Image 1: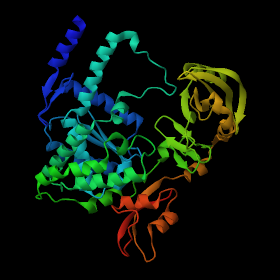
Image 2 (image 1 turned 90 degrees about the vertical axis):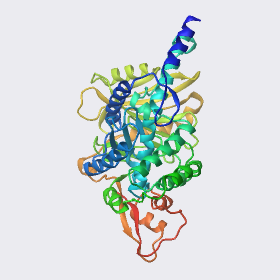
Image 3 (image 1 turned 60 degrees about the vertical axis):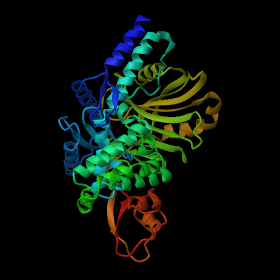
Image 4 (image 1 turned 120 degrees about the vertical axis):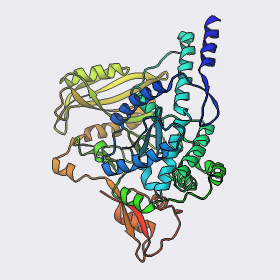
Length: 477
């Protein structure tokens, strides 16, 4: 009882009114602590996701962001704006003023005003202290959880926990918080001189993407971390109307100049999916995954699952074993993940030294069988590639041969072969007579749908092209 009263006192003392929103919030950190958390998480984001290697683009985004920050309610924060090297259509913010665009959103923004609307929305999250509020609620929950003790057992994840920084990237706010940030974003965009209706255009594009594509590889896209965009288009109209028509800047020409050549989809630095292959030209290896399986290229692993998913997956990761003995690394790695070896031996896979084995473990009270290989590739001492296929026991037999074929396909790439692997990029094309979205998609790229390119140009997928118009396309690497 005394502990409960203490918790209530702490919670009450942490409530404060936010000047940007007028709401009282539960915040367990000072502004200085919020900034420190943001700096720590920023370092994690930059290390895990990587900053997109285009200094001109980075300077441009930061310049636009700083104008918005000056129009915010917290201009004194150490605001920083960056493009991270992620293919997802997304943007996010950390406490303390650290804001990011995933490069995957850039091809779908029509002009500088829409980019300002995205950044303004994220500035709104920071101003409204949504991340700090969510973090504080988690801390409060942690206090009560500590009081509960053994009522909250912890399970062991096979893949490992995400960093605090990535936790903010994956954070999903409630509908009210997102609508609040939409409204604030419109206000900041307009106050800084951009056309406020850009927010509606942005949300309309995202709504079409939500319907057409759903999630993309990498981090979650806007559709998964935000409420439905179509609903928000209607709700933001009041804020756009209140902002008036005095601000009209769109700066489309400058925006298109800066984004021409931006990587679309996977990058060389993180490896590229080509059909059913995963190719990494920097680390110089390739692996063939089962035809028809959905491949996800995340920051710390590549995974593949059949369309019906079930409890089946193939996962590729780098492991640091601290030893050059493949068998020892395999034993330590799989034991830590909760698996024991039932058979295994030293082998070679396409000339590479390896240890391959079959393992058993449990997950959610089900017996899981795994076939795994620990493959030595590259010069770093103690570093191995762990390529493992796993399924619940009664499904393993049906996928065992597919898993084995993928494991045995792991191969080194020659330097000339690696040099030929290039990413897709955004380019511009002047429409000629006879051009259609389908004909352009077939002739210049591999795997990017015609409908996707139409949405990139602010058009409905079935809309006709006009001879002479300049459109965005994706050119294959």
